[in-house]
Amino acid sequence: MKKIYLFTSILAATMSVSVLHAQNIHTIAGTLGIGTDDGSVSLPALSAHFKKPFAVVVNANTGNIVVADQNNNKVKLELSIDHKIYSIAGNGAAGYKSGRGDTSLFNETGGLWVNFTGDTILVCDVQNQVVRKIATSVASAGYFFTTTIAGTVGSMGFSGDGSAATSAQFKNPYSVWKDASGNIYVADAGNNRIRKIDVSGNISTYAGTGTPGFSGDGSGASSAELNSPTGIFIDSTNMMYIADQGNQRVRKIDMSTGTITTVAGNGTMGYAGDNGSATSAELNNPTGVCMFAGNIYIADRDNNRIRRVTSGGIITTIAGAGTAGSTGDGGLATAALLNAPSGVYADNYGIYIADQGNHVIRQVDMANAVPGVEQQLIARIYPNPSEGKFAVVLPAGTKNTNLEVYNMFGAVIYKSTITAGMSLVDISAQTDGVYYIHLTCGASIAVQKIVVTH
Image 1 (cartoon, rainbow, N blue to C red):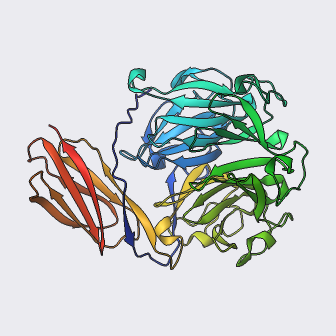
Image 2 (image 1 turned 90 degrees about the horizontal axis):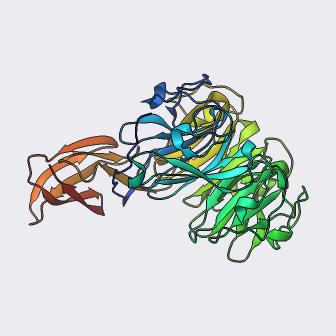
Image 3 (image 1 turned 30 degrees about the horizontal axis):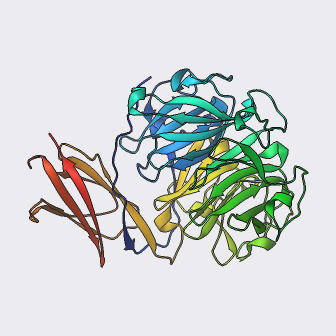
């Protein structure tokens, strides 16, 4: 197994850009229709293989993509620096074993969460009935290591509230997320609950009575009924979104008050309601959910669609024509065919889809995903430090951007105009030291320090 070092430093600068008015979709990882595995071999993303990927998340700092490769019993990583897929945890066999990532064992990997620095990942080990942590450090010599942080291995049930999470029981935990205070939340699907693991490692029930059903909107989440919640996401405003799959709804909990409400779905399994109120629409086994820039994105699994709910509560389809299939790359996302999409994640660069039945990760460019709405973007610059050669990546839809590099004395030592995608910059002829990159797009300016060391 190749050792993986995550020391890439990325510019996180924002600037306003105008957008295109199209919704293009493409495959960014995996081989369409081929459900297999590559062992421990690292391959270019489009040559790699998954087997029913369940979830996808993107690290905001590095741009690395993390995938729960469910039926290969692995967690895989696509590095933004080389766009290759690496298996970082799980050796492919179904089982249970902790320790170094390449020798650890999982039994169906589920929902994911990744921290800002990209060195810690949480994942639901569904059939082992536990939540695992996957982490690396300088001391770990480039390898990831796995530990269990909640659940009793192989013991399906409900117990443990009020005590240590490592002694508790889950019943098919499918999704996990961590809040800004360090508390961890688990969608305990078979127990019809959201469980909370506090910073001291103790577990409790946060939402759901345990009885499968639908009730409680407008009141406290702990007294509400859920039905097989499979997806969970917490946004920066402390709102929790739940894919309440068995209820054919997406629910929201205001974590400051504990109040639960429905934000999408009327409880009827089906497909209806686009361009109207999301709470009057039909969903068909919503499995994954996320929030970005005021919009809720739903993996409407058995409708073979990705749906979006705007801040005004209007639902539309943004990807998938409704028929299970694998066509459409390079064209309009709404004309493409998806196959049981189970996971969705969004950032400034795109909407990422775990297209489970097609065994791939697909992307709708974010700059093209919200017609008429100006988007904020993140320009990625790596590696930093470098020997003076680095890449600058701007998302699709970005206007021409002026790039200038200044030395410590304020002199411009490099300038160019760059466009969307990757641009290479070479200041390797300069002496070691600190330099400043200025990016200008219209009236917006972003500045980032870089270090050159030969």
